[in-house]
Amino acid sequence: MSDRDIKKATTQVNQNEGLIMEKSSPGKKGYKLPPLDVPAVNISKMLGDLERRDDIAAELPEVSEIEIIRHFTRISTWNYAVDYGMYPLGSCTMKYNARINEVVARLDGLAGAHPYQPEKLSQGAMKILQLLSECLIEITGMDAITLQPAAGAHGELTGVLLVRAYLESQGNPRKKILIPDSAHGTNPATAAIAGYAVENLKSNQKGMIDLNALEKQVTEDIAALMLTNPSTIGVYESDIHHIAGILHRKGALLYMDGANMNALCGKTQPGKNGVDVMHLNLHKTFSTPHGGGGPGSGPVACKKILEPFLPTPVVIEKSDGTLGFDYNRPKSIGRVRAFYGNFGMHVRALAYILANGPDGLRQTTEDAVLNANYIRKKLEGIYELPYKTQTLHEVVFNDRIQQRKGVKTGDIAKRLIDYGFHSYTVSFPLIVPGALMIEPTESESKEELDLFIDAMKAIAKEAEDEPDTVLNAPHTTRISRLDEVRAARQPILRWKKQAKYAAE
Amino acid sequence: MSYPADAKYTKEHEWIKINGNLATVGITDYAQNSLGDIVFVELPKPGTTITAGKSFGTVESVKAVSDLYAPVSGTVTEVNSDLGSAPEKVNQDANNTWMIKLTLSNAGEANGLLSAADYEKFIAEEQA
Image (cartoon, rainbow over all chains, first blue to last red; front, side, top):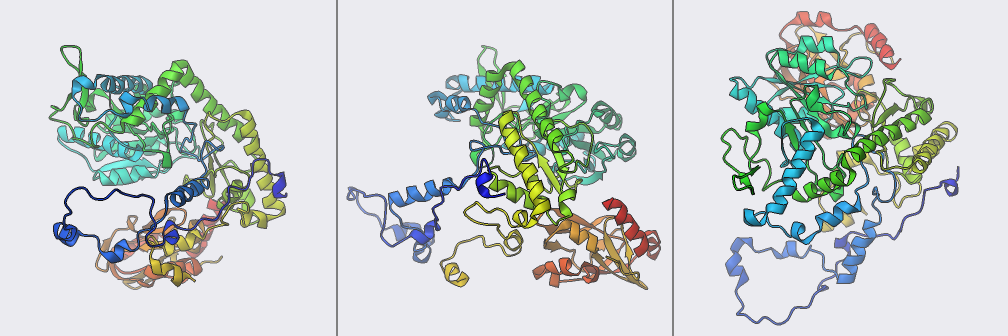
């Protein structure tokens, strides 16, 4: 297939662009200051050792205003974003960030609010925190929440610290956390940082928790199970209430990684299924910006037994009916983030929730699941589906069929760039060797999904008929395939003037 | 790929060659092939006690970080320091690239390990 036939591919605004350091020439600048109208001071004397040394200062780029504007504008066109096209990166829920969120977050009173302004001038902002908390508590079916954590993994750590604080208050923090092999990779890291040993739990043939194995593994040493639900292969743990029962009988708690809440929102409440504590990713499920457009936000919702340990401060209603911050919570694990968390994200998430309403959120979930299953149906057989269990918001294939010609998941992902799409998630989850993990989200129309499906079919055909086209992809980008292995083995993380010459 | 008959194997894809009370451990060719290009190998210091079935280090490829599991219990006597600057040696010849040497604390544990023939059968099933 010639690149002309690829419907979505386009050569990008393709000007070459060097590093900003390489554009520098001495004395260039983008400003002109008036003469000094205060007495000059001796900077060297005031700063002493802290004064910037000439040899370092000489390496700072000196460019004009138009040069710097062009530099960043050009490289900004090399990005791929959900505003350009489908971004089916599995487990990341790269949905459209509605513009209404941005409009609301930029309202003067919200964008200009200062965290130290007096409580009586912050009633609106506090009302937003309170209302968002109430919405998320209802969505999760939990009893209490903190909005402080700045990201998903930060939420996990906060949640596990709540578990530890609770168990300590019961007399024994316990030693281990159970983590299924289908969990998110951050879960074991979280458990370890919180001082727990990690014990793996193997999935059964359906990619689900094996209840008998769980029953045997849960002892009085286990503090909690961290369950990603739906799991990384998109499968809902329908035995979740049994899983909770097994844990609770031994005094252990059930943590749910809510990163995949886009499959459940408005359909089921984890709190009603025995979950004790969970985090949400506002930058996934609730459409706040993601990745480079962040920051993120990872609120943690919990049951009543964990509420006393939530980070401070907590928004409360005072006796005069106004809102205030309660810092006096002696059992709290303390602050996990400066001030009240990433407030701008709270505003955006609330705008999204209120704009959709309950029916809209439910529809969103249904569309996300429908889109993923449409892709599954259309691509099954062309790509191998290792787990046949019913899946929700994402679908995981493997590259076994394409591997016969030496084409692996990473190669297919690179070729997908030529077709105008962001890659799916490569080589994850680990329980599926050669995984292609695809999550379209509800944002995509049938037309866009069909373009994606056509692209995936075309690549499968290329892998069969002309594997080199796939193995050497991408072909339409500014830079061809990067040497990922060398980048990992010999990382060059800092620019040095000499490096330019050394490389030549 | 045929696996050396003088080694024993684990289901976690390590090989171990035992000579009296001493042993040498590495990962199998199947393991390196599933991991892809290896970029970093983290090994314990000599003198570290390791326990059968527990992690004694990690191996990082461009795809993932995986634990190394001890086939038997013992004390590490030597680590292959070449792997610090040249982890690709594992990709080039996994079955002959050792990672750690150790003295066994319980020689009987080796009886539970797989023979080369059993291991080949095991990975054939994994691939099926």
